[in-house]
Image (spheres, each protein chain N blue to C red):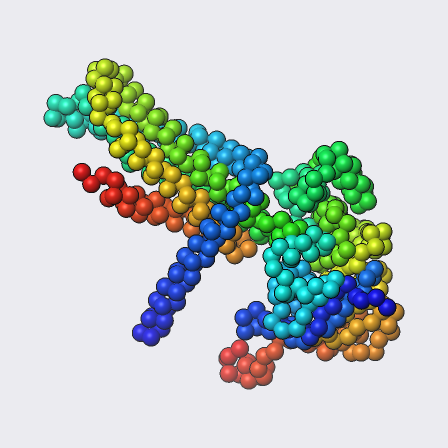
Length: 259
Length: 267
């Protein structure tokens, strides 16, 4: 019994300590960001690796999600004779929720895990220590560019995901099923508000970008420098990012869309 | 005699409860190559980390060129590190950069030299380690010995006053081992630098260093010139130099009575 309480206490203390360490790490990233922006090519390179290299999975997934939304949405809407509202349903689902959330989850598994693995392996092979011994801060040179690369990529990828999803919904609804083309777009244009729907979606994706990028660089930097340590860090990145995205999504949705 | 470049005064260091260095005092004179030797896990690498300011001593002082490393702030420590070079055990080359870019890295980070001059300097450093022809290769294409020579070129890129080598001979074939040994000596003399080599390769070290410290159980167990070490009658030094399995450093990890453990069934 005492052992269990002790373990629980240790778990809580460890969790709080880890959170504090992460906050301090986040602060250091912000402090060193100025230095890393003076070498902007480093951040551009990370934008390429995190953003451009994730394009394929984001676009293909967006298309499939849109196709499924089109099929499911039409099936439900036609029961109520509202199949013309398919465009609205597809667009709102995507820009408000599915775009930021699913793109965030995919981004965490594709780019987040890669960033953790790269930084973790640099730690294992003593590259970070070597850099530090050369009087070059690894946070400025390695961590900050990867963090900003993720933060900037994420909203752009979410936007592309949503756009591709809408296209998928149109493809299945209008081209395959035969919903009226004009009604599809007109209803969508009428119902989707830029500030209320689109902007809130963009804010969500920006927050997810910060969360995923921070978790990815932190887990890499903090990992135990062994093969097993890196593998655990990658797992933690994917799991923690997914949980953070879903929890943050709930919190933000409850503030943004209260009816 | 001038003030030594590095001086450790009664240094104590522990990871949590586990004491690594108990009371170490030693010095590295200017212009000399000094080896720090001892069994695996005796705290040799920790010593280098203390000199480089990556760890701070629990007690005692680590002085480098007149500065107390343990008391330096981040800026001052980074300023000091620009005058130090450290060669890591397996080179620690940046795997996403070519050999050329690895050597150019400290120059690009710390100087505003024009690209042509950096190009010339990098080629000179690579030439010094015999790898000018490998400038365009990636670290993954190099053998272990070559990678360490490239790392050595990178270490000397800014002409440091102090060169630190962490197990530079580990895992090398005899030819590469000899090459690295000669390079350490030649570069030290050519640059007018001082060098610390942390190693357990006694035979190679005896050929190239000026002075040797033996560390055991967190203390300096023996010290002397290579000549004195070869002729030493100290049981610890004798065991180390002649690679004997048992002696002052026991073969067995401390354990309870063997017979009792076998009969009682407990370790």
